[in-house]
Length: 232
Image 1: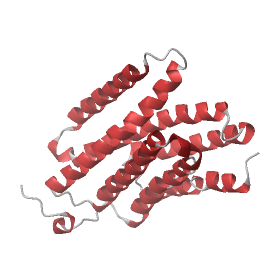
Image 2: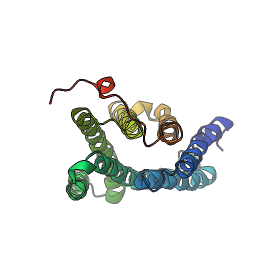
Image 3: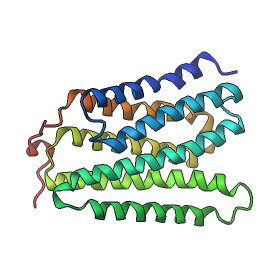
């Protein structure tokens, strides 16, 4: 049976997700950042469902492992579209929403095809391996796209403080998860030790987004010189 530490670690993120959604509603930012908040809501539901599997079958059970990676893949797709919505906000003045949508769909399909090509020769557990590979690859794609978005923000001298906070927090989140996947692949013997990292990392995003909704008004602006001096 799981010990007190496992239960504390499990429920650590749930209050932050609830607070982030409440802050979004209170500050009238839920519809404005719809895809971001849908991701947080989906993550909250997934956390509760995972806990049920975790409580009944244990952290190292095959049932929990399967449920975790399948739900993680779905959440990663949610987060991927949340990132694309931030692209739309940054490039809204250029009327590039349709281009961003096409790019998002093309990258998602391309990532899925690449992930399948990596695992298609595996005769056993093909679907499970595909789900894990897709999730890992989407984290990597999300990491690259987030830093490209940040470079665009610097180049365009974007000044919307809340939007900048949302993008930066997403970059940190993707970086932490990408590092965790890299450590798992490089050091398989540390997998049991690294199991505690994803729940801790998952707390960061709702904390950062909740702070952005509550403390940073939509009309708040940064002085461009405080971001960077980027020649045009």
